[in-house]
Length: 115
Length: 113
Image 1: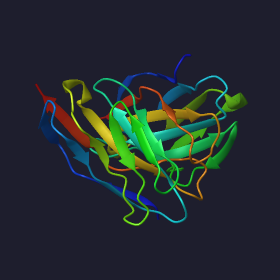
Image 2 (image 1 turned 120 degrees about the horizontal axis):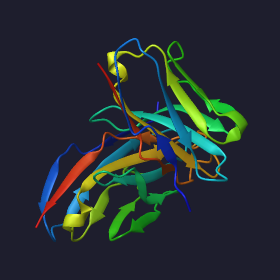
Image 3 (image 1 turned 120 degrees about the vertical axis):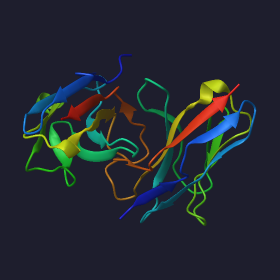
């Protein structure tokens, strides 16, 4: 079974530029999560989708971050414009459904460096 | 709000030593508790979980027991190996949540031969 795919793996941009990350979850998984992991910290949820609808985006900085999950499968996360403090690893995860006891399966992450 | 506090690292042990990584949590309701592990160069993966009080999760020689009275979920292993070197994250999924995880800061474990 293929795991969660993410691209690119690494990205370096200058502040005020824009960047987009892509995630393809495990086939059949209804729930998709984007997390931000700053160096030395645990991952923090940015947004959660159930199929193609947003369940929780309360911690997404909506003035600069946006995300979509068209057709309820793959997803993109965009930052525009980027700030220095956005330097982090962006993790995508999926699970069969959004219940609290379900295991989440994580992709390898995209490491973003903002200069 | 809900939160997880885990032991600061890094932790360095010799092979075959006993491991404990402490984890305590604050949550409303009845959360599920998890330990995730991140091996060097790899993504996060589930190590073990417990979904109700007094449950014991176990996998690969690691164990953790869900203690509601002390709001703890400490990770233990009786004899660590070099291959256990990784970063370990304690996490919870709250009773009122839609499955999203709240993580601790992570504890880096290095095991020396």
